[in-house]
Amino acid sequence: MIGPAAKSGRLRINEIFLSLQGEADAVGYPTVFVRLTGCPLRCQYCDTEYAFHHGDWLDLDAIVDKVRGLGAHHVCVTGGEPLAQPNCLRLLERLCDAGLQVSLETSGALDIAGVDSRVSRVVDVKTPGSREAARNRIENFSGLNPRDQLKFVICSREDYDWSKAFLQEHALTERCRILFSPSYTEVSPTALADWILADRLPVRFQIQLHKVLWGDVPGK
Ligand code: SF4
Image 1 (cartoon, rainbow, N blue to C red):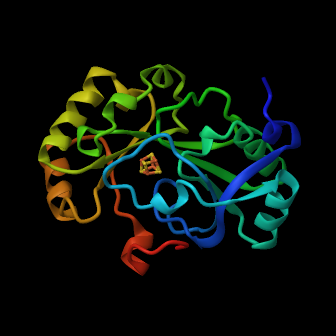
Image 2 (cartoon, rainbow, N blue to C red):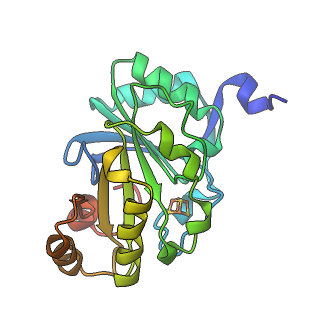
């Protein structure tokens, strides 16, 4: 059954703001972030809990207009878990149609198959340290392509070893690009960099640029 939000083409939006992209392929580019309200997961390190419940209903035209009005070429649809709202797929299409470089940040717990092929998908793999590893949707892996990125947030040495084994078990480095990030405050970035180097692991190390620049504040 189609709910009222789907019929009217609306989404519940927590915030829309301009910042620098802090992660993944488009790191460093001025980017408009569209943060959708709500997430079915509860990762222990979540830094966007403020997006779980609060937001305003906006129609797709208003969202696209606001994004264009902020004037950046890149736009990132994030959350929460943006795919938890079915109209997110229509928003992604509309943003691509507007000629923008569109990326999607998703938890990896929901089906990504319906995402417009023009979108750069950044998909989490939840490690045991997140306490949500049981939510990883393994079926997503077969549809990954070289434009996609899988992101592991590493919370400990145990998480690192688990992630390394998980990469091998699912042959993930052959499917798409892999990002390893240290969990902010839980793992030293230097330690993670040293582990990757010692193992010659074919993954891309990253730190969250926006947190280096502005700390852990909403809207940045
Ligand atoms: S999936 Fe993302 S938004 Fe949801 S709880 Fe985990 S870190 Fe937070």
